[in-house]
Length: 211
Image (cartoon, rainbow, N blue to C red; front, side, top):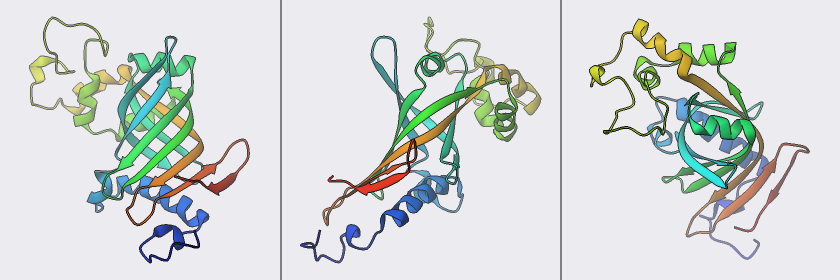
């Protein structure tokens, strides 16, 4: 690293502690309505998990972040196949990519399902009707249909249900709580790449890594 004198190389000015804190702040900034750049970055993530026959991956929406306790949350239809997969194999990886900052975060997590408890109730209460609409589907996600299906009762069309009507979707709603065990940070840049790891369990440690 001493051979790099380019002032633009971020690895010359960062400390591991600052980088770890900044990573969690960037995740949390998704929920800052004044920060439009981050909304398009870490708002969605790829959830990679194990199955009985191999591996699976899909995009989910980040719904809550607790940087102090190292937890993140996302929502799902309780009938989705990934729920059974995560119940059988709770270890998973969350992959984030911010194209503006050219930053990738890989979180190694242990998942826990909430569907009928107060945690799920709290998330449901905060969920906009536009999002609740997607839990009104009469069919299980991934089930075969004779025609293309929008994911909610067809009579709704482009209209939103009333808040009272949306309550019927509560039985299909679940929250996946992810306890973060480790974070892998990677920033891509022509001026020099930066990679680091932050382990939270079983022991806390951090280190610079070769990209």
